[in-house]
Length: 501
Image 1 (spheres, rainbow, N blue to C red):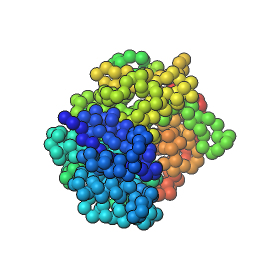
Image 2: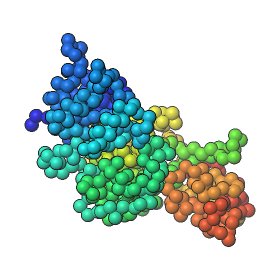
Image 3: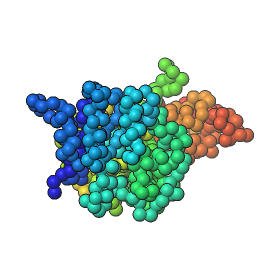
Image 4: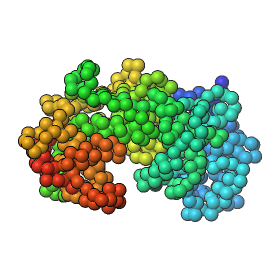
């Protein structure tokens, strides 16, 4: 089959990096590179030919016109028309497939002629808006996959872009969608406003297909995602030794949306790692340091969730041993990546781009394509062995704990008649507590991510043991509610070491 040719609107300097990113992504994606080749003007060598004639000739040869419309209108010819508008008009005259992407949510600051072009394009085309390069890539990806489906060139899209066979929009949780919009606006200046209708948000993220949610939407926002994808859960286990052995001291199977899975799995690991608490010499809040940097643990688990094969009957597994943390992901590397390339700067090639993009927008992924490099760097800075990556029937990330450290589960046996027994989670809470603090402040002090886990494993047991008390006991749900150490709690904290295994 001869690949279809994509012409990306040409000479605007404003989009040089976006053109290059689209070209590189489409060339590396295992599916799209079979069907498309990309023309960008940066790849054209110097020639004795007028640039405008060259680009219009390329539009003539193209099957798909991909227009990037931004702030600038660009150079204007003798008739006051820019190359971008000439190219769009030529594609329109020749009935080319036209895909239009507009940068930003507000056109008010754009050049007047660019505003007019955007309005004209919107008269008979669906325009997609984007705020970042990664968002643009996800949107183009979804559009091109849909083009292939519409032309019967593929029978089914990638897993995350495939319409759910069972779920409907009614199965999605409005509150979770609302929280995502608020988080994405604060974290990444997401262009859609608070209160945006659910369907508009889903359409913006390419999570709808003919009115039905795609699999990514179900995994990200459904009331009960495991009702539709039972293996999307995460299994977490903690072993005192260096091998898998029964009995397992601690084992949890977590369910929920992908955001909740990451939060719960991260908190499971952090609750078992050695923790040291510094002094309050410089601030009221004592500094907390875990033996493996939390950012590294998050990256390993997020990578497993974002890049796994969701058609597999296996689940993500997180296993903490005395000397290491292993994260098992039922998936494989894309063809363009190798284990060696993971340790070097490399392009981002997400296995599930419609899943990866919302994770990025909610700041679960910091920068596309830099995750493994950041993990290696942070481990070096913490004085740890570099992470290891391996392939079996799964992709395995191994993070090493410090050599020579005493590890193991806190049993909570603290000497003294007054202290009794406390769990490892409660002991950690006692160490970071100052008086008084709100629930969210205590959770932040421990750098935990999942509110329900914190409440059920840390705060409620501390209250039940009489180690903490409410400042407004007759109004337990008050927005002003805070928690402080009791006399018993203070005694237990004073008996605890400043470093907990």
